[in-house]
Amino acid sequence: MKTHHALIFTAAMLAMPVMVVPAHAVDGADFLSKLETVQTAQSSQTFSYSGIEAGAGNTLVVRDFLLRPADGTATDDSFRQVAPVDLVVTNLRENANGSYDADSLSMPATEFANSDSSFGFGALVFSNIHVPAVPSNDSFEGLFHADEAHATGIDASYNGKTVLTVDRIDNQQIYDMDSQTVSFSWQAANLAFDLTPVDTLNPSLRERLQKLDLMAAKANLSSVGTWNLGSGELRLTSAKAEIDDVGAIETSADLMGFSMDTLGQLDDLTGLALPGKSDGAAAAQKQAQSLVLMQKFAVSSFSVQFTDASITDRLLEMLSAEQGQSKDALTAKLLNTLSGALGYFNSPPFAAMVNSAANAYLADPKSLEIKIQPPSATPIFSVFLTGLAAPQALPGMLGLSVAANQ
Image (cartoon, rainbow, N blue to C red):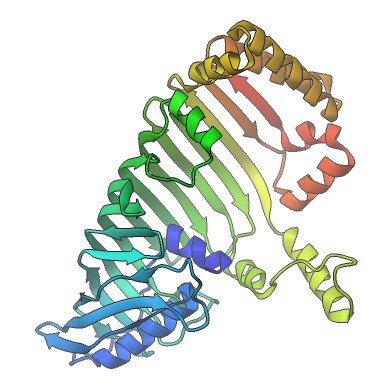
């Protein structure tokens, strides 16, 4: 999936207000043709069906709907829909510009599989969908989107044995036309995984996961934020994973540069042409464009916090047993190694802050937070270059702080 298409599908499947053609029987075949075109453009998937049945209130039943990889995109690992299902579209409406809106698009229980894995859901419903007349990367009106998406009864299997289940996944968006801002939220409830059936798991990793009692676990995931399509500000209020008997990790961020225009340019550049790797004027031009584009992505703030629920002590106990030393001796060794690594930054105040936080956390593991708060939005590429040329300047440049048990 292309760069900004991935963001759009996970963070902002939105409904656009457009002029509606006066009510009449809509052309189901035309709707499905346009849905297939945008589906292929946004996700490299296409589909087939055997027939269309029109019902009251512009309801369509699409018989034997079958998703598959678009021509030329399939690989041995590609997932394919196992059996056709009937797709239902309610209150379908054609707009004056040739696009379509509908109250809902729903699929019943559906399974997808490749050579050794499969996944499926009990039901999938999109609410207030929009299908463009012609796919376009320039605005949301040119994309498939929906106000809400809900999936229930999700599961995944490996070699016929279940490794993941999720009760439900819910995605909601609110789109403000005046401010060009998307407010989004996403939740995955009662996620449970079990790695026991995965026979390709590295034996050493399997042994360690067993010692940590992590071959199976339960979790809940969520994210909330806003995205301004014009300015490109992507504000992640919270992205959180809560894992039973492990802990909770929560991230927040304020990032710049994620405008539709910039993300479209990013899609147009297939890669950075590095000196010595490519020759010619075209490669030099691509490199220059890439460098300019990379400067547009910036960070205004970022934080990640881990709240422990016993995993730290269990990990220290496992490692100390493996190395044949006491837990206290291992902790001292880790702190000494950290102090040495901090010398790279050549910043005694920063080293003292990190060492203090590490000492406090390892002595009584409760929480650990790393935060970035630069004086102004800082290009991510500049951070990378500073890290190479003058690492001692990074803590001040980023307003970097580390704190424990707060």
